[in-house]
Image (cartoon, rainbow, N blue to C red):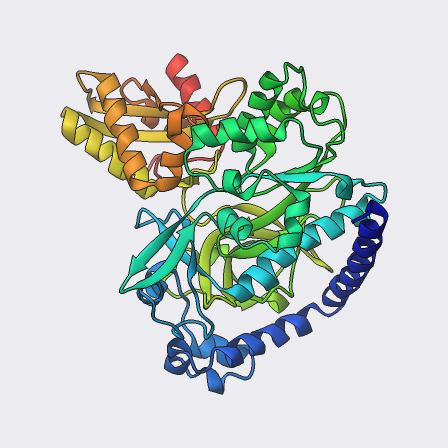
Length: 505
């Protein structure tokens, strides 16, 4: 199809969609209330809908009163039955795709993904990402070349003669893309969804190095590995020496801040646009709609009803839960969603703040629990507690305290740096590290993937702290007392550098 016709059709579609976005910006509460009733009416005859009397829900008050707050553990029995082939449990249409992600108590969570969620949420998010970008960059040539998007992989799960499928949400999206989308993306689906990373990296770099790539999308840590491979293959100095028309990078999933300098070193002198998005296994939530800002427009018409738990209620058994009407600026909230995949009042674990209430714009502030997600590994305290306990058990070591933080990527892959204060040190610290590392791989599939062949995360680095190191740090922070604990995990290096300074004194 001639480029002129493509641009004409795209221009018409973009104007139409921008008008729809203006409507939910103008009437946000009305749009959300409309979606709430549509969700509960659609699912009224499901097993979950009958249990909680969806037919009696006629407003937010009755919805919040009748349906308890959920998490993965409470929905897991329904999800597992869905995977066995049972239907009409959480959502009336067939659910046969499940986005796999790491959980806090299991090695993996399996998030149901219905056809409606793919179409109305994930795909609309992708299209709106382009529409808003072009609206802010009228001279964009994004339709003159291809978008390079890294995908994960998916597998078949068979039980009781029923087949369902699971994998990274990126793989699910790519596998189910409409045919027309293939004209604008690279690499080929067969390569994008390969499971063996080393072979995949080779084919990715070989098949895309001569493409006219104009936009890229993916997790920063993986992207840097690919970029360096392509630059090496082309014997180039910068990525823009290879892809001359590259103009935008759409990023999300993990914080981009630590990678900015590495990206500038790889890209070269050409100015590149950076657009932040907020997408996850559970849905596509927000898109950066303004230039030179890091906050994002909350997308209100994707088949998601939003609720929020104020920070002061995170650790309380009885939680206050509010809807969009009651949120305030610059307060931290845990995100709760109800979706067209049957996730009802579901806590996804992310925390956000509102930077604007007209329109509703947000920024991601972290997780409700301690975590490290510097490279997309989603390490939880439970994982590190289990790993260090196993390492101590096998090596007969005894620990007093520990903390972990990332070392961000430069020319080499990143790593997790541990400061461990032992009561009894292991005889062989290298063996201790080996056990710890392999236990983490066993407990967390995302960490295992990022550790593969040291491409993204290298072997953990352990600093053995002298006696009373953590005591001295707590004293310096005026935090001596039983109510104060050492921060186990941190996504930045603030605590780590403070403690290292004490060690070096």
